[in-house]
Length: 355
Image (tube, rainbow, N blue to C red; front, side):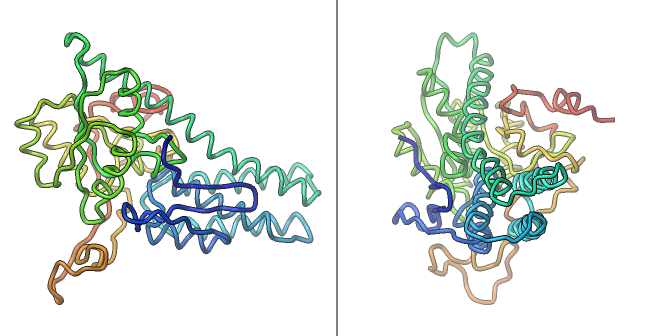
């Protein structure tokens, strides 16, 4: 049974507060869009797919429980709430894309002449609720494509098991369920072709140590936790089949933004001739960002770097630089894994018709 980060039924939403894992498993109720914004901004919920889903479902809950006098009020309400939600965290594109599509759907329904308030609300709720199952289905397909790609690269190794390095958290806790990069690992396990997983601690927020390790233990997947600073030695001394990471945004040229530390993993993988894959469903692909340099990198507050679980690990007065993400250039990426297949950066550029 996979972990459940999001619990939803019409009119009710709870999210697992991931700041408290692995020591405490506490679900918090989300009643308003403001609650959703705060949960995303404070990183109680994180992972690009999960951020989009929780943001939209917080909108669904408030929409369900709110009375309107005219359908035009619903349109204004949805537009305002979407505009507010996307300010919670700027780097991941999923929330912005999904929120805009929800508003456009609402606008189209109103333009088509839907004057029944309850009917309009119901159609919007159906659309937002569908995000949960769509995300799981997409990730399962992505996982199968990704696993097949890695195994094809090992075709001459006589059914040997794969050893995978992953970074940050990309599993059930970062999505509606199953996961992206961790979904690829799940798919390899289902095929009995997974030997071992290495996961980084992922400083400064320790999503790898707190969350990925938690999921791997929960799923009984053979795994080892390493510090971020151990990656080069790991690649030099252990036989890795591939590095598989997630993405919060994929630019049109195939550059990808992901949790801080990903870029250095890609550079090290290139040096050690290890395939480096980015697992990113289409919801992570940005239609308006051409180049990785155009991606806005969120910077987090200093205390997140200077403390662990509220305990100071650095002296007062020291300055901090705390970017939450970095950008990996497409030339360092072996393939981009999606629910529609695995593409080299060149194939990725060709399929979206770059000039």
